[in-house]
Length: 413
Image (cartoon, rainbow, N blue to C red; front, side, top):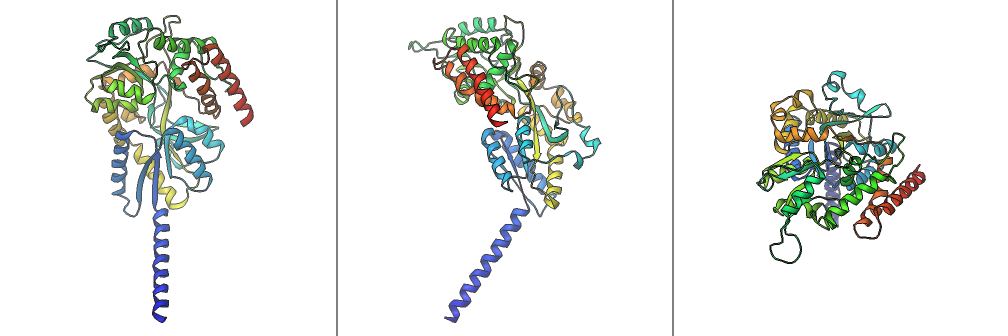
């Protein structure tokens, strides 16, 4: 019996030691949540490993989530007193995060000299909201462009009329099943975010300066009708197409062009595709370029951090937004860096893809950071997607989007 008691005491002692050890590990572990694609994830991990070489008593990890999942999981965990030390993503997260008090202001943690070392044009790199700095970016853009396979089309179309002519020439039906084997263009057009450039091309916006939805407009109707017609009448884009289908068609050479963002270019290049990047074709009727939303992408700090862990997290944030680390992403993925000394580097100025991306960004619209945008996205999706199933006309869908957006904003305010 005495031996058994000694054994139980010994096991309890070991368990207590392990619990203390685990608690210590958690306190000295800094995690970054992000939505970077596989190539970006590898680079980020490499940078964390590099930073760890000068912080031997700390553990640095990164964890990928899809953007929507990352945002909701972060809010839940941070409101519960936990969550990652750093959250990386687009600036449109800032509004909800600030309203729910899950990130902390950063302006007092950094010198003005450091903050002045970030670009202000074409768009400001760092995001202020309600008078405080909440995000420091390591890249700007995140915007949609027209990406084309140079082997299939040496010169991309500059207008929708040119796109239609090119598309008819590219249509192929090699097996005679009545369906095209190759499309001129593919993109995730059933997702509202990917339709916004075309709404702007018809002179519209999805919310006004007072953050009220402006969806029931002629611009929305015409943009939706154009996209529907490209699929169902011109048949130069697939009748059904989500992000994965579009990507697969482009990667396999069954689509000559794709509308996608800079997060995808590294994958195309690594798959041996000689890509070019340019503006989405101009709307002939208005003479306007489609205007994708552009935003900074960067790091926000968890509101629950304090003490030594906060200090090391801020050091990591400075490291990850240094010119050297930003340019590593630029060289691998064509991202547009945010530090003034990085954007003037030849890796940017001599890079054709980046210069073309900036060319598209110059006609983009800055992504609002207000929470209303989240409800507008939610309101747009069901009605907009019903257009492509034939359940609603573009006019009916625009009206329903507006009504639901107003309802969601009214209920959540």
